[in-house]
Amino acid sequence: MAHYKKILIAVDLSDESDLVAQRARAVAEGGDNELHVIHVIEPLSFAYGVDIPMDFSGLQDEIQTQARQQLQRFGAKHGIDESHQHIVLGRPEVEIHAAAEEIEADLIVVGSHGRYGLALLMGSTANGVLHGAKRDVLAVRVGD
Image (tube, rainbow, N blue to C red; front, side, top):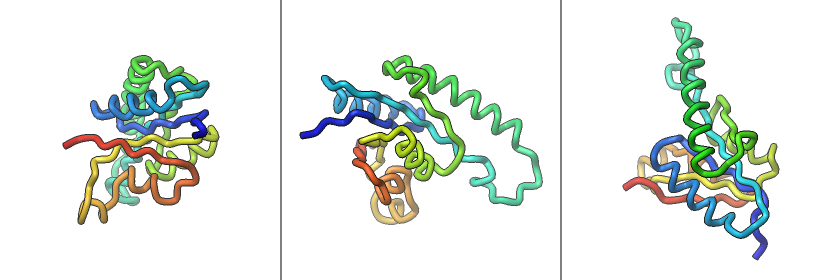
């Protein structure tokens, strides 16, 4: 079995992200590889629609600052070099695919809550990453 040289770990920075990173590290164990981590911040305009009568730029900047600090702590905890930590703004599934393409990842590791039925139809990041992936995707079961 060929082993993965570059692994992209997609996290939401919740407590469950630790399990996702642990599984990625287990896959990487014993190999000569690179671990990268990505956290995607959805712009507030996505949540509230395109025509927002208020300026959320200050709040968006604060969200990004907080996320950067959390990602640095997360990366340090899991031994991921700061140069391999990526924070981007956009739709998670789109940005995860773009980052995987950019770093030439062999594998994307993402957490999945194992939703089914209506929750799956409404969409999830893991489902979005899986569909249209040009590389292997490992969906790690997290949550209840």
